[in-house]
Amino acid sequence: MIDKEKIWKRIRKRLDTEKTTIRAILLEFKWKLIFIFILILMESAIELLIPLFIGFAIDDALQGSYWGAVQLGILGTLIILIGGGRRFFDSRIYAKVYRRLGNETLLKIEENQSSVKTARLGMINEIVEFLENSFPVLISNSIAMIGVVIILASLNTQVFITGLVATFFVFLIYFLTRKRTTYLNSAYNNEFEKQVNVITTNNKGLLASHLKNMMKWNIKLSDLEVFNFSISWLVLMGFLVLSIVLSVSAGNVAYGALFSLIIYVFQYIESVITLPVFYQNWLRLKEIKWRLENL
Image (cartoon, rainbow, N blue to C red; front, side, top):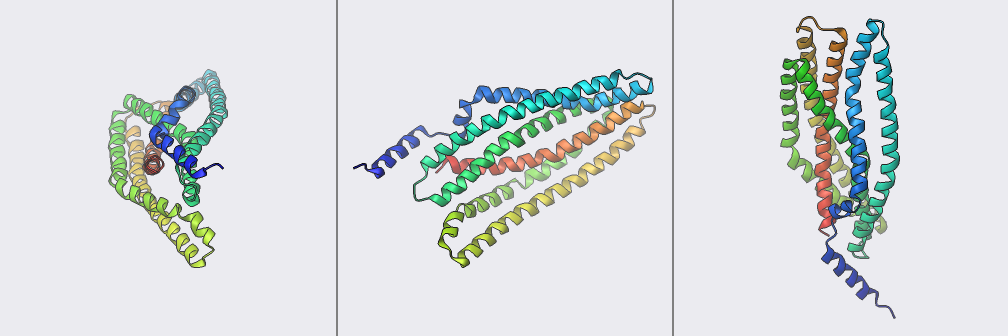
């Protein structure tokens, strides 16, 4: 007769000894992940050049040449080929990461903790979704931000300095609310881990209370995000208006160059407003990582 309890204890002991972490599992796929990272860098670098080549195409067209438009078309084609290939490849890699991480996590949790298991699988899915969908955008935005800062510095020093000041205030807003963000995510995850147990009880009172608590923490997280985003957007809109004024007042500037400058300013604003959101996501994933590695 097989003693399932003894087998289960041996499995638990082995897993506790090995202390499998998210980082260790990701290292198993490091070369494939590095390849994905290289494709992301290539795609981001080409995207960074698009506004500049739009300006070249405009200036060439005004002079009766269409070579700039041809170059722009070549860049667009490269983005499609590299971006499509990267998305085809990474969806399969991250599916393997999800299965590996999910298997290790579920084996560490006691058999009777079905509610926790279900919640943790959902949290693992959040991590994989971030790696597959949000991480490429994060890299792209970071490269765009760095590249645009360099380009703005070469095109207009006043716009460059104004952009740095606006960026400082935006990141300061999110940094000051980091503890509140972590606390709300922790409270939400605590309630989420009770979900399956509450549902299986068929107790209307418990279910209503659980759903109310879930939505309470979700609303508080949403309200915090709205506050941070709204204040940040006001700062960046001020930067956009001021950059247009500074660009026009600079004097004799070619239309293509002026157009490229404004596009780069707007692209910079998109990067700045998006990066703090990734910071909020990172705070949430950090809390989830702690749960998965401290069962």
